[in-house]
Image 1 (cartoon, helix red, strand yellow):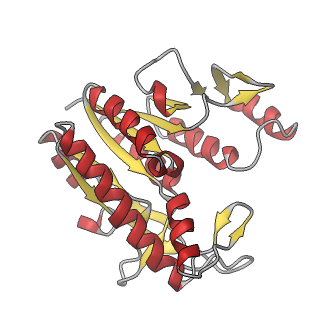
Image 2 (cartoon, rainbow, N blue to C red):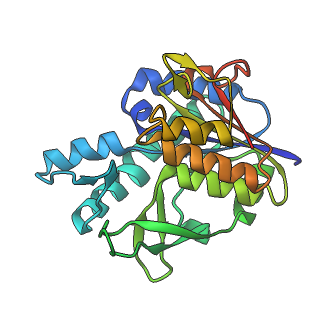
Length: 253
């Protein structure tokens, strides 16, 4: 095994069966070894509301109290993950669903409550890819959910983009690795047009001028960090153009 692709898909796609089916059909067509990381925040929000738990967000980031942690664990590791694994099996792709706690793949530390207490949210401290490599060598796709653990018996809610970036970085220590972040937009946009190639200096200017804002900022920061850690290629694109190398935004240092 000399190449692997780490693909992250946003939670909005998982909410719509037709979109998810289209994406997974393209994912299965992707040649070579691959890892899938997925979110599920939209579905978690809907379940929380049904259970009378109002989602609390600060600067676009979820506050995870104990009740919310139970919900995201059920949704991410249960409902969404197993639906994706089942659909992959139906498409002829053997897959296994994993949290960071499974096989001790991803440990994290509970985020410092100062200055903002985000609750049971984890910042990644270690990623162990030996088991991921073992699955990949057997033709099995690891399907990783945005949950880690602290090594003390506690699950932690962790950003899916972070997990994808850190997994790609660690795999890149041993294998040529590509990171693809998919969502419902065609790429990084400027005045309604996709930016084909984005280097770090240009990104800083676009951020300063508030052309790049909100959730796109941490996504891009994680993408550039992956390049710094020897990930060979990072692309941000629409989930429908997964196998079209002419689409999306390619990051450059």
